[in-house]
Image (cartoon, rainbow, N blue to C red; front, side, top):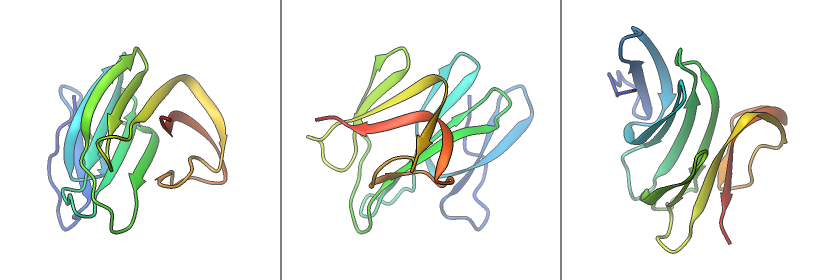
Length: 141
């Protein structure tokens, strides 16, 4: 599993390592809130450690700690606390973030799917207009 190693001069960047592999990866976020293993892959949920203007960074890495997909859930000047996290399927989590009454569902695809524009605000990807994505984050209604 992954753990935070250091944050040298990077307030919202974490270095993670995989036990036994001797590999490290740099990902956005500062505090590991949750981590899950799906086969030989890792799902990491990190926050920036600032509940008054918080961001949730979701990273999906392979067994070699190569970043497969990443989504950020944030809004300017908006508080957020990751809470009520539950595994709801073999490939899905549900949680609350901005408000304890609103629920988000994160699904991991078996194979990456083509996405246009990534996700809608406040969930976003730092990827091109058209990209292959493993993660799908939607607000439950």
